[in-house]
Image 1 (cartoon, helix red, strand yellow):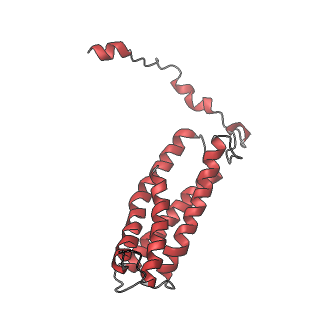
Image 2 (tube, helix red, strand yellow):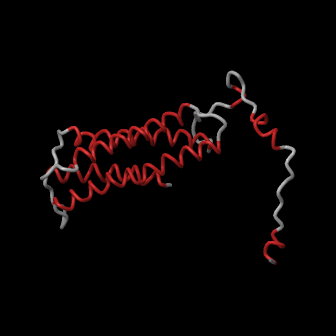
Length: 174
């Protein structure tokens, strides 16, 4: 679920950056608050993006025998987003005054980050909706690969292991 925070923070950063650059005031929110908000959102993207990327890698390794194109695209896009945001934070860290929309960092915050998040959302939905049979999936069965992958070959070494059984009533009694 942490991936949703990454996408939300990218949208918040973009909106707050535009409002800060314009010097806009909405209700009692002034430019100084916008500046804090977009900076905090960028730091939040990195702080939530790292565990989101790592959990995506580990979860993917538990669910599938191979990395298909959608997962590879999501990994590359996640790494691109993290690298771009770290570069933006570094570029904007020492800039006094209101930010400039036309600066490379401004274009990154307002355009590149949301576009990368849109692409991440596309691939995430393609994977998820395909698994739920609501749309075409990007998954290719292992037996359709060249050469075919037999998942049973990987688990055959564990067949001789005795099954681990936990007796619930005995656990509770002790």
